[in-house]
Image (cartoon, rainbow, N blue to C red; front, side):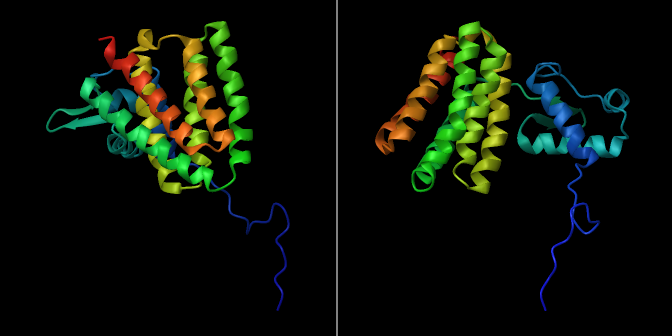
Length: 225
């Protein structure tokens, strides 16, 4: 017996609805990344629930998600605090980020390189435009988009999940230490080298470009302190 396709708008077609805890987690994550919730600051449930217009249940679930992501830390009998990343944390973060990007690179080279390049090129254009304008925030946003798209091109769900978590931590680093972001043109040039090596299908050059970019980013964030 053949199955008939469900018409558009059918009640049988599932609709993805974001849960309240997920929405709250996104808002808190953004506030942390943008520095609206400062590193080391304590989260006060009653105050946040009122500001966000939610009950404490969804708020607590959202905050626990951010604890798992490493953006909040829990202190027994004291509460939850926004993390403060020290130099060792930043070094460890970049060890993991390099491993993720290089693993993604290997997978991309074994799949559809052209599709990955096509997706990354307009993001690199945004980076170059932001660098020319001297727009650090726009460059930082495009930077994170580039790496997220790069890892997504690997097709690995687990790498993608890990990358998103660590990219959020990276954005927190850049926001907190924004003055050490360095030459904007240089940042765009490093990503251009990654894209060029990917387009050429040269694995050795691609791995070296990722290594150089991560080392330079780490030096900008830690070496200047």
